[in-house]
Image (cartoon, rainbow, N blue to C red; front, side, top):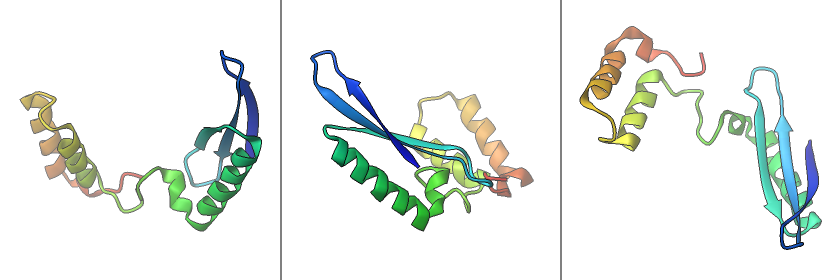
Length: 109
């Protein structure tokens, strides 16, 4: 269930913050919010977003579907995003973890 809170900005304009909080058994706590210029837009967003979450509960895990993501896949993705930002030792340590049996476990387990 979503809530709408009225906020007054420094310049005196009023904004409406729509917030959705969901705590379901077997899923991580989920919280999402967005700010709108009218209360009606905030209400419409809450309805639309809650319908999307009801149709696709994997959204509660985050942006991506973590159900099938293994530790090996997560490390590969992390190294691809970070690139050469970190030193050689950290990179080699993560690659070593990828070779271990634990790397085949799912991230959610």
